[in-house]
Image (cartoon, rainbow, N blue to C red; front, side, top):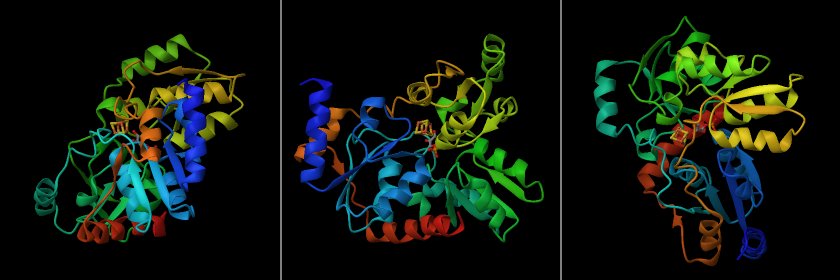
Length: 304
Ligand code: 13P
Ligand code: SF4
């Protein structure tokens, strides 16, 4: 089958079988073409809960499919490639969090959405990269234990110096690989370009940026800006999607290291196999995890 034939079969089957396809912005272009919604972690979780279809295919990584399931408990949610996990989400478990809570008693525990649902059961509220500043500023508690990404935490802390923050020593291995030297070299190569970065980048990379935001925040900024050239400080797919959408502008990657292999594991054939009932994994979570994690995620939606 050609790519086009697989895409046509996916579109036919998703209508016939009442499926909605969600794609994170780090998915490849061929997947976005069959998706009903493309977005960042926050946007997708909200779209999933609003959509009326009975079945959801979440093209992204495992924590995103779990979030969909928690927000849409009556729907069947599938992860097309069961191997697609987020290394950052798997960095911290309940025992590690317990240790930190003992070290920082009385702190509000704020979990980046890139965490397992099990871990979310022991946290006070979730945040995404697009909602973290707003939510942390609204919390009554002035002491925040921010897990697991200290880079996003550091970015949030800079917007509210009056609050006290404690961090876990984690982070996204992909964004962490980008150095300030990469940023400076890209700026030297493209002196008229604006630098747009994701807050998962190191603080000394963020310090070089003209704009800091989530994946869809970066895309919205580049679409609206009157500037013609941009260096993209997040996963490579964003460079590609923007270049397709805005052919009159130029987009350059900050570094060739910013490729998330886990996000790229999902293929069109994986999606087709879910629709045929021959592949993928249906997300099943225990009642305890559903209840505990939904408290944390629903608080994010209420505050965000
Ligand atoms: P967004 O919340 O911007 O979609 O980011 C998710 C992610 O995994 C970034 O690496
Ligand atoms: Fe996880 Fe980083 Fe990949 Fe995002 S880019 S899914 S944080 S490993």
